Length: 97
Image (cartoon, rainbow, N blue to C red; front, top):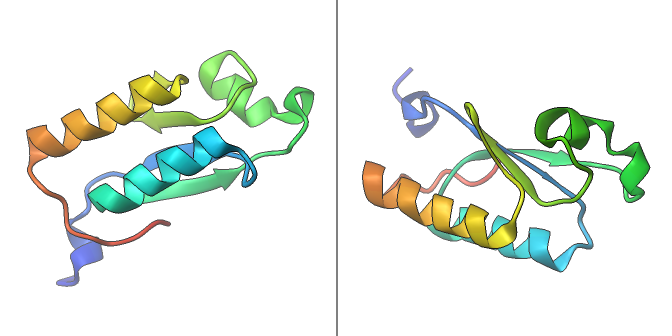
């Protein structure tokens, strides 16, 4: 493959709900930085967020999983995303999913 998507070696996974302001901040940051990610919308009710619990050990969102790194606090997620872009250089804008 020669398109931009073929150069992506990994995708982060964002677990979120659509109405959450903290989740929106993380989605905006991912878009701003051009970081591709797997978009996982989880149930609104915390006890039903079994997928989030399996990844992070808790039920709150947003949660980012990047290989073996799992972050559950918005501030930590934003700092991590900024650090990833500064370590790897600017990423190609490919959008989400």
